[in-house]
Every structure is written in structure tokens, then in C-alpha cells.
Image (cartoon, rainbow, N blue to C red; front, side, top):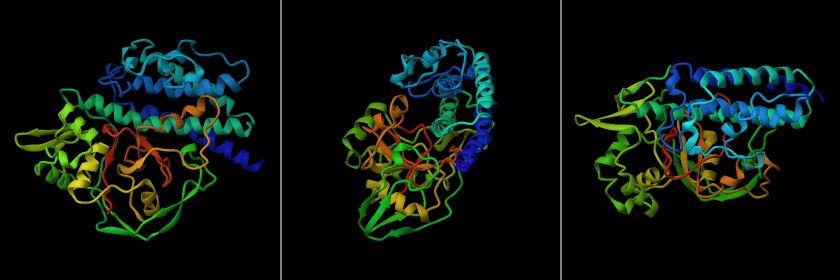
Length: 388
């Protein structure tokens, strides 16, 4: 019982802190910024604010709080993302069409839910409720990172390249050379007692061959060498799907890069600046990461090699592509009902990324965390670590 009380107090302490951080990310946005959706996979900031609020209302308050009254019955339709078990929703591509509810109403909604959930957390709660609230908090932290990605995409496609009042910047690599991984059988998966997502569970053994993994991420300078060597014109370096993507979308450089008067510049949340040659290259798709590795005569690590090496790696600047498809671990079991839709149904056509990024909330990363994206994705903070 004492463990449950400690866990509940922990949840209480971080609930409002996490809720406030989401709003701090948006503090330099103007009202006109909140509803913009420049492309289908980017959600408007207003939608993130509403969705992370709806999550607590849908999965906690409406189920467990006695006599709870919904803030607005229409909000479930507006702010549900992909939970088919809880009803209909607007299509993702149409999220930017919602001028109503207004951003002021969404902030009012957040205040309403914060008040009710704060009061609810003062009660004695059972393990199931505590776990659901914890999932809600972890879910909001994921959306904090997505918010940064989406705001950057919105700003990065403006003619005047606005800046975000948030300290998010990369640093040069601090290590060089390669780390040796010895051939053997290793345990993979989450073993702790704190929170993890269901896709990290199913601890199992994996056999790994002798290999080497770079201690550093590929830099802008190294990637420019790939560009100048004709990397985007050499079909021999690319997967067939990747080459189709390059040709169809006319890809010639990482996302947000611009050639201005013969010099590479790129958009950061501090505006349009010269590409710093010493920093890790960012906003790279799996297709590009794989082609670069081919060009270097190396490869991307598997997610299992990465997890074994992570104990000796300085990671956390950028999510790192692995050469592993996103699949369930042995004995994987998804949750019942809507929460079971959180990870399992995306285990197809996506690649695993490991590590964390400078946009990842504090304490939200761990060596077993399995992020996943389609191979063409690059609006997130993504880089390259090589293996051989």
C-alpha cells in the first residue's frame, strides 16, 4: 500500500508541471499560428493542446470521477486522434480546418480538466487509475516533442522564418572512433519497475555478431561531402522505395536546408542560419540515412546492437535510425480496448529509432525506448549513427 501511495504522490507532483510545460512551448506563438496545418502529417498546435486534454477527460475523468460533466460533447470528435474504440473523429488531414473551437476555448478546456483532475488526484486511487494517469502524462510528453516538430515545420515554411522562444540547440560531438560490441547473446527489453510502454516489454535474448558502432553522430560537414559527391544522384546507393522518393519529391538535401549564394543555410528555431559544419546532421529520413551508410561502406545498427551499445554511448541529441523494422517482441501483449491501439497497430511499414533528441522532455528517454516512423519521415529531430 505504501508503494501505491508513493506512486500517487509522484503522479500528483508532476501532473501540473507537465501540463504547464506544454503551454510554455507555445508561449511565443501568435493566435494565427495555432490553427495552421501546412501538410497532412503536421498537426496544428491548437489540436495538440486539445488532444492531450481530451485524453485525460476520455480515459480518466469520464470513467472514474463520479458525476463528472463533459466540458463539451463535441470535443471528443474534434480531438480524438486514432482511437477507433472510442468513436468517430475528424480526419487527420482536416485538423487545420477547425477554426472552432477557438484557441481561447481550448485553453479554457485545459484549465477545466486541470482543475478536475487535480481534485481527483487528491483521492485514494487504485493501481489501474494510477497507471492510466501515468500513461496520460507520458502521452502528453510525447506530444510536447511533436509540438516542437510541428511548430518548426509551420515556422520553417513561412517566408520570414520566425523564431520560437525555447532553448533547443544541438552541440558538437564529444567522442570519436568506434565502440566494439563483442559477439554473444544479450538480453533485450525493459526490466525495470518504473513506467515503460508495452512495446518495450517481452524481455528476450538476441544473438549479436561482433560489430563496431560509431561513438559520434554524422556531422553536417560529413553529410555535405555525401551531397557534393552526388549522393542524391546515384541510384546505386538507395533502396528502390528510397530512390522513388528522391525522384518523386525532388529531394536534394536534408529538410530545411537552402543553398543561398552558393552557401548552405538551414532553418532552425533560431531562424535561418549558416549550417554549422561541426554539428550533427538533423532532419534525415531513413532512406537518406541508409544511402549515406552505403556511400560510406558501412551500415545502420540494428535496434538490438544499439541497445547493447547504449550503455557506453553519449546519446540524446537526435533520434537515431536503426536498420530494424518495428515489430513486436516475443510475448508482446497489447492492452485491452482503446489503449491497446497506442502502439501495436503501427507495427507495420515503420522503422525503429532509438535514443532521444534535444526536444525530448527530461526523464522521458531510456535505452529500451522504441520510437518508430515511416522511412520517408524527416520532420522530427533525426540523425545518423553508423555501424560496421
